[in-house]
Every structure is written in C-alpha cells, then in structure tokens.
Image (cartoon, rainbow, N blue to C red; front, side, top):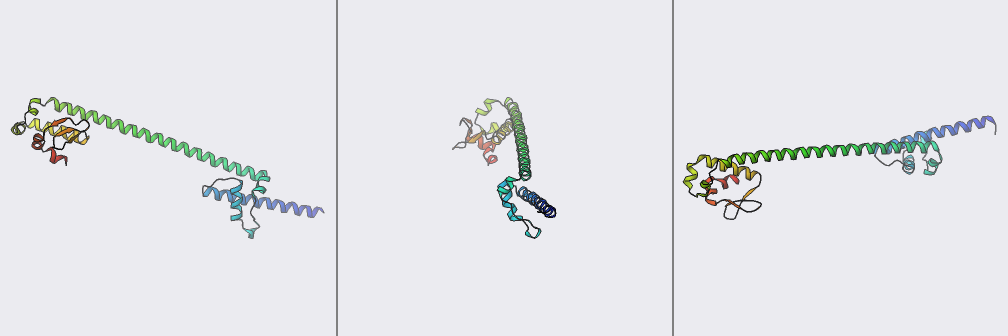
Length: 198
C-alpha cells in the first residue's frame, strides 16, 4: 500500500470517528431531553434511530461503543453529570420538605397559641358567671342577667367552633368527648344556642 492510499485511509477513519462522535453526542442530547438513562446500550439504540445516511451516519452497536475509549468516557461523563443533577434535585426536594415541615410546625404553634388565648378568654368569662344563676332554671333569670347571657353565649360559641361541645338526644349541651352535661335543654332553648349552632 502506497503512502497516498495510507493517507486516504487515515483521513477516512478520522472522518468516521468525527461523525460517530457527533452522532453519539446527538444521541446523548436526545436521551437527556427525554430524561432517559444514559448508558452504552441506550446510546447505541438512539444512534440507529437518529442516524442520517445522507451525511454518512450509521448506527453504532453497543460493542463498537465499548471498544472506543473516547465514546465510553463521553457516555460515562454524561451519566455521572445526570446522576449529580438528580442528587441535587433530591437534595432540593429534601430541603423543600424540611421547609414545609417547618411551616407546618409554625402553623400548629400558632393554633396552640390561639387555643391558649381562647382559653384565657373563656376563663375570664367564667370568672364573671355566678354558678348559682346557671343552676337556676328560671327563664326570667337569664332574661334579667344580660351579662350572664352574653358570657354564656360567647363561651358556647367558642366551644362549638373548637368542636368541644355538642347536643345529646334531648338537646342538652354536653362535652363532646366525655358526654358531661353542661346546660339543660331549657337554658339551651332560652339562650338560642340550638338555633345558632345549626
């Protein structure tokens, strides 16, 4: 073989390598765009799908890719880069989950603070109530004692909002959790609690 033929063969091989390198680069870009795994087998399959014979491209087998250190290095590098990006995304998600958890903790603390404020308000109202007035079933007593009526109504509204009270079968007001009777149905009717609770 003369020097001219050797030179032509070397040029041909160099052109093929360049075309194959470009084809593999395009295959990797395609795989990245669809979020697929990048490995020698997947790159090989894509080269057959996207190769353009009009410009001298043809698909490469996985074996041919594995024999070429440049192609292997390129694929491995891209695979590592994708793995790194995935790890970064996972870390971001973890950070986001931590932020959401912190937000939920803050929300719950705010709720607890609100409950504490409500309880203080209830305690304040309860201090102003004369318990003998509550025991007395007379409707006139409730009508006459506006402060008692307003205090009871406010307390009961808050307890309903917090789902701490409910009605029994006879419409007596009771603690939801334990069933303890708080007010009999006569007082419930007089205070208009049943109407407000619906």
